[in-house]
Amino acid sequence: MRVYVLTQEEPFYIPGMLEHLLARRRDVIGIGLVPGELRPRRLRRYLALMGPRDFALQSLRFAACRAADLAARLVPLGRSFSVAGAARRHGLPCERVASIDAPSFVESLRARAVDLIVSIACPRLLGRELLALPRHGCINVHGALLPRYQGLLPSFWVLAKGEPHTGVTVHLLDEGVDGGAILLQRRVAIRADDTVHSLVERSKLETGKHLLVEAIDLIERGEARPRPIDPREASRFSFPDAAAVREFRARGRRFV
Image 1 (tube, helix red, strand yellow):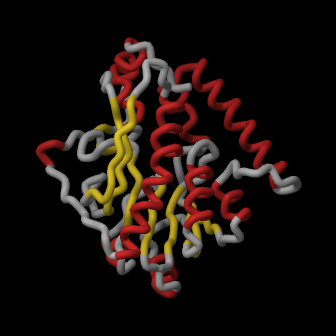
Image 2 (cartoon, one colour):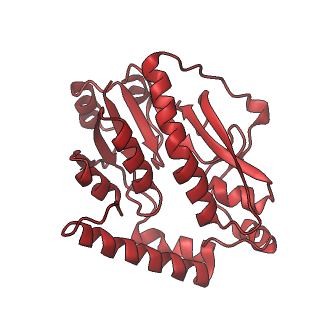
């Protein structure tokens, strides 16, 4: 099987997920980097969301990861601090993809006979032609128990709403937002001291990386049993507004 990963550049969680995937699946043939959330023009929006303290802490962590990523080009550090760094460690091509629906990109995947597309925090919806291209379809890792908490920043929203648990879902992609049939799910308890960072780390990085490999193995063996979601149970969330942040803070939660 020939697997292609679509993701965005991010230093905190995605490199660890990729390291696990690439160590266990030697059939990943490439990584496509789509323009993501960590862009200068979006910094003001995240400052308003996180507040000065959490934004400063996250910025320091980001700077430390960037420095470590540069150092890793010279000295082996034992782990990756960027998506591009994970690709380098495993000798995989990593390309910038300005538009995932551009005919030239779709045709390049067709020419490479891609069997499965894996989305790890890919910030763009896949179009009909791209969804239909791989013979095993396209799958995604979502940081909640679908069909609840579809959409953006599920780890923020479950904390804001006071949920006792959340989870991870690996599901098939369709043309909607987190609406494809479910392949695997695993529950994750929410702790009293959880932050958005700790919850994403424990759900996506510690749990999701194993669930993703398990799902790919099932697909390869022809044992996957997709379960359609019940739209009556669905709840969808977008980028948090000021009222949502107040609700989040009122529960004593932080981002980092």
